Length: 91
Image (cartoon, rainbow, N blue to C red):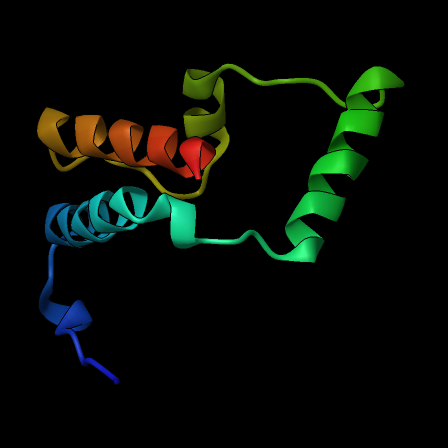
């Protein structure tokens, strides 16, 4: 089943709201979602880098500032983006 969204005409806020709706639905069905093997492997690799002090965690605000994506439409959009990011870590 394929859906076409008017992405070119949607604002950043509308796109984030759409993603938030999808993630909310997915988290309600998270027991049915199996992470792919590559995801597990990547997490193990990153864990080793942290243990060997070859990598480090970055504060969320610092990561946002370094990102090429800037959420500057409004405060509500930034709050939605933060909630969406937190949901990504839950899955």
